[in-house]
Length: 274
Image 1 (cartoon, rainbow, N blue to C red):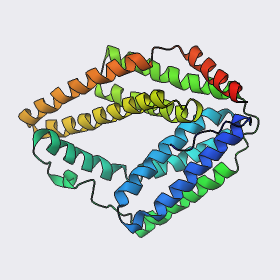
Image 2 (image 1 turned 45 degrees about the vertical axis):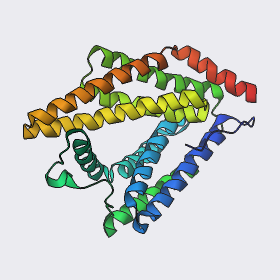
Image 3 (image 1 turned 120 degrees about the horizontal axis):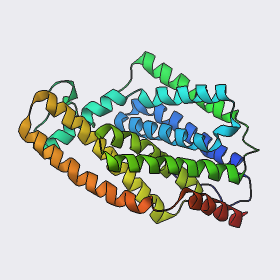
Image 4 (image 1 turned 180 degrees about the horizontal axis):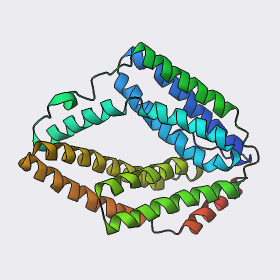
């Protein structure tokens, strides 16, 4: 995310609103480019931007009326899910070929490089949702937000990700690992705004990416189990174990700090810039 908060002495509300609007405007550009070729790239960018918006809203949600927050989140969910099925099918197919040397059959046999353009009606719905989202974000009043509240929300998100880490350590079920990824990615996107330290953010990005690959492997495992392909299934299980070991080693380092310490770090960082 290039939309890092500046070092001016303004309060966080106005600065976070600028980032939210920047992401929303870029989303509209992604949608406009869907028909220009390489649609899969713009679809991926659109989905990532929706995850960024969801994460950043958590830092300011105390300043937003509940009804407004609900409709903003509805549009984010709609845009994020618009192409989810196409992406999952393509990933399963390509991952299967990479690990087992064979491609899947059926609707998942397409490649993620194949452009999946929306129908005219779906395109209109997507454009309308993006326009509504931008307009609602423009109307937000976040001027009263102070650094103490932003830092508190940030540390709460980190604590949530830390609790999921502990649950996954105890019982690393595939669904638990998948649920853990969301708070990890949210903390990464928030860190890019509040603690944009190069090495720290790179490590959080890596953890989120590894958890994403774990989820893709879990989808492939489920696909192969339905087809009762024992040989390829064992290869997938072995790869899942290797990645799970890497994930826990990295997470053990990233979750070493207490949430209160992280909150203090945000306050110290931005009070020093004020």
